[in-house]
Image (cartoon, rainbow, N blue to C red; front, top):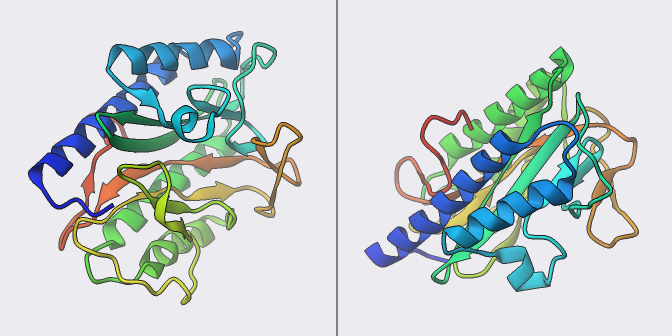
Length: 254
């Protein structure tokens, strides 16, 4: 989507705000002993109360309102009454929702205490990778600036990037052109960023080889070596300066 009007920007901002606040609300309610189905129900209720509809459900008939992935589940794991959040888990909450025809898409990883130095460091570097990529985007720059910036941070920390998971265009639909925005450096991503273009930036940093496979449920993406990943994501609107982050919530450090 190319945001062209004040109405577009206002619509994207409203959807993004609901999504961002939903993630914060879910993270604050999350606790050991809770099932991922219970946490998803909290997210579903928040979206409903704020006039939003789950975008994965609308678009793909996804079996839950939000995506809640734990430990070696890198992304898209289905909430389950049989999956219990445990102390020491690394939980990724990914929420995308539609409000009045506009979509916001965001995600964040939350360590459950006790938090090891290894997990905290992974999360810190992933936040830095997201921020570096955000700072790199400007109208007229090639798409590869996103991957170059994110990968530089990952390599500095000694992490791999999950190359199969990239950003994407968003706006009126959950997945729009470009359908795959790499978070690693490749000259093939040479298309120029456009003024008003709406997309997600969402690097996945990994402790292992950075390879994933799709589980038998057809949705969950799991690391092949059982290693942990962290992800932080924002929906952004490209400008000729700093991008507009529609999903950022004031006071939150990602």
